Structures are given as C-alpha cells and as structure tokens.
Length: 299
Image (cartoon, rainbow, N blue to C red; front, side):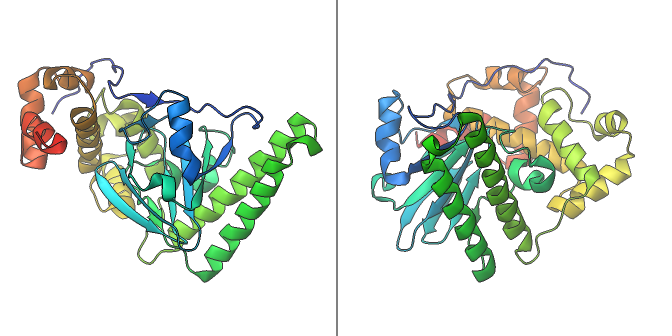
C-alpha cells in the first residue's frame, strides 16, 4: 500500500485532560479510587464512559481490593497487589465497581518525570500489557516507592512549591522505573532495542501519514530488514504488521467509541477513500468497519 500523504486529523473520541484538584501540586494527582467517580462528575464527566486520557495513569489496589476496567477492548479484573498502567491515548472504561475499589490512582502528564529513556516503550507502546502482578521483591520495592511518594505528596506545605514539585518528579520517576523493570522481569518479555524504540516513536507520529516500512526506514536511517528484525524481537510482529496493527487499533477506537462515520474515520487515518479503508480493515480483522462498530456497541 502506497504512502497516503494525508494530513493527520483530530480524533472524535473525547480526550480527558488532567485537572488536578485545588491544593494539589501542579502536574500530579494522587487520588483514592473510591473518590474517582465523584471527582469525574464534579468536572462534568461520566465516570463510566469511554474516555481517552491525555496523561499517564498508574493504578494499584490494596490487599483485598477489586476493580474491573477495560483498556483498548481488553477487560481486566484487578485484585489486591495488581498494578495497571494506562498510557496517554489509550481508551479506557471503568467498571461499575469503581466506588468500592480500595486502591490509589497516580496521574501525571507525559514528560513529568523526565525518565523516558529508562522506561521507554513500556510506558508508551499501545500494545504493551496493561496489568502487572509483581513478584515479592518487585512488590516490596514498588510499595516503598509509593509510600515515599504519598508521604511527600501530602507534605505540600513543608517545602517551597518549586522544591516540592522537583521532589515529586524524582519520586514518580523512581516509581515508574521500578514499574517498568517489573514489567520487563516477567518471564518471556523481550527488551526492545534502540532501533525499535525509534521505530515505535515514528509510527506513533506518522501512522496516519504512511504505512510503508520503507518510508520509516529511510526517515530513521535503517534498512527495512533492521526494522523488521527489531519489531519481531520486541513484539513478535514484523515491522509492516506492527504499523498495520497500530492503524487497526486506532480505527477500532474511533469506530467503537467515536461518533464519526466510517468514511470520516477512513479520512482521519489517511486512506484515500472508504472502500480502501474497508478492504484494509476486513483483511486484518475479518469484518467490516460497520459490522465491527455494531458488535462493539452491541447494536
């Protein structure tokens, strides 16, 4: 499929921006899960609607806690000790058990920690596993990191604001690096190399502009074979399949949660016309965009 050359268009899915509560430090929010539904309503949001946060959310459940949540068409049932990391751009939907959930959510915008090289695609790739049940050593390290973060978060008046925020940035960085390492420690999880990290970032930026591996290889200074090998090791997919899967994921998000017609979704994703999009989507999912939308919405 050729380079489409179409400009990116804005998603029709409602984007949720981070709006910290009064008295909290800028750029960071720590909130008990049981309060999340009421806070959403306070800001005019339906806590159970499908939304697309423009920020990171790290959720952890205390012992005995339970929570259901859907992230990009995968339903997760969390229990005590589990961690959930959703990244900016993912579409999530909280379960009705949210008000009874015993746990904490940490929300912060991209770039807050400055730890991007350390956490890499674990924090960014849309295909990463969302839920983690850490082993004993990782669980203890995460608990200690979270306890320190919560202590400093609640000590707003004890330091000048600039120093307070700087401390919080470092502590969130500690937590995310520990969490990323715990994800990587799971058996069978590969470690992406620099070629894949750059390829992933380019795909995130340009998947509505081109679906050709050759274009990414030329832009990044790699051969097609190098990108294919890097993607295969990191994700089990070829470079071409990785690009196409990213386009399909975005199409599914728009069709299931947005209000635009299939034709408008096709244009937003850079397809020349709706028939080209329908053929692409059906070849990779086994169904048409319209049929997928009906199934996803239960209509």
